[in-house]
Amino acid sequence: MSHRPPAELYLPPEDLEGVGEDTWLDVIHKMEEVYSRLVTDEVELEEKNAQLEQSQQFIFSLLSAMSDVLIACNQDGLIEETNAALCDLVGRSEQELRGTPVLDLLADAQSVQRWQLAMYHAASHEVAVVELNLRDALGQPVPVDMSCTPRHNSVGRQVGRVLVGRPMGELKRAYHQLRTAHDALKLAQQQLLHSEKMASLGRLVAGVAHELNNPISFVLGNVHVLQRYGTRLSRYLEAVHQLDLPEPVRALRQELRIDHLVNDLPSLMEGTLEGAQRTADIVNGLKRFSTASQGEVTRVELNAVVERAIQWVQKGTAPHFEIHWTRGPDCHVNGNAGQLLQVMMNLIQNASDAASANSAAGAAAPQLQISLTQQDGQVEVRFADNGQGITPEHLSRIFDPFFTTKSVGKGTGLGLSISYGLVEQHGGHLTCANLPQGGAEFTLVLPCA
Image 1 (tube, helix red, strand yellow):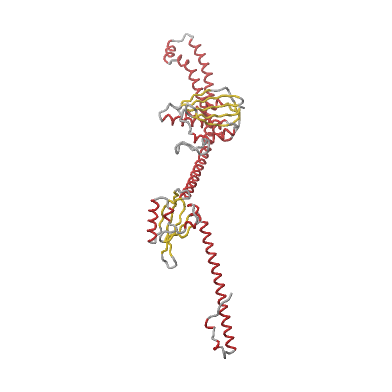
Image 2 (tube, helix red, strand yellow):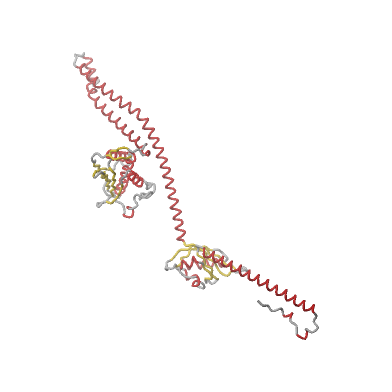
């Protein structure tokens, strides 16, 4: 690297005569200072160039890493700078975009009007937020939420605009995911509350059943004793009435209707026994319900479980639901009686809801056909309702957790899912299909004990 000394260091030849040695030394020293200063300036310049290149590389990496689209344009709306996100969206390179109008990226007239309004606000040194439809690589409109900000030079003069925005599709997907997660959390919370309520209900039912057992036992025991006493009293009165009783006694017999009372006692005893026995059966059912969660496996007669489920649903939530039950041969399975009862009740209740909804639309009265058959070591229970059936898109998801076609507040979407899991735990399977004549049919298959 060579540098020419300053002009003041050059002297004409005629002026060099008589110049002393000290003068030449000063000249040489001056030249060394100038050269050293030039070298220092050269090093500083190279360092500044390196810093500038590093800054440019840093800015480029930031622009490339941005997921939001970026457009920097001049006062006339011509693109001066973009980033990779915009290039990927519109399917054009940065070189192709540079120098083109922003209007060329807009997909419709409404977006053009919004862009012009944003340019007007930016001219007034205001920040504008506007939704624009950009034309993507396939020519389809993509909504983008844009923020338009004035851009100034080093002296504060406005030289253009900067637009930064994110495609609304990403925001909508993020919002949808957030909403789905929130709904799932709410359902999980409701399920936890429901589980706690059911656990508390189970403890309450167990206590009530225990308390009711004592008076029911008293009633049953006393009625049996009264039956024996009644038999004895009848024999005694029959013997007394065969005697020649005084007229006042015979009159009192007629007045008190002793013969009618004695004849009516057996039926009264039988009715009392029947009522007490039914109460005892209800208490036993409550006790089975309270211990259902314990998972106790016993040998269960399935016809009795179906009949108990029918009785509970009809006496509880569906008193007018017509159920046609075809009892099968005595069939035993190994399982938990409470859990199998829960499955049967869920299937019957769902059939009632589906058939009742169809009846409300003017169709036939809600009905359910239940049949039990046994073959090849398996028992099959079919539940066929006369509802509207299940749409094909819902049929594949009918056993999914939290899936329900009922209105909000009418169902949690867990009944069929829980039933499906309980049946699998018992070594069986639960399926669903639409009937040709309309309605849906659930088929429960369990291995025989």
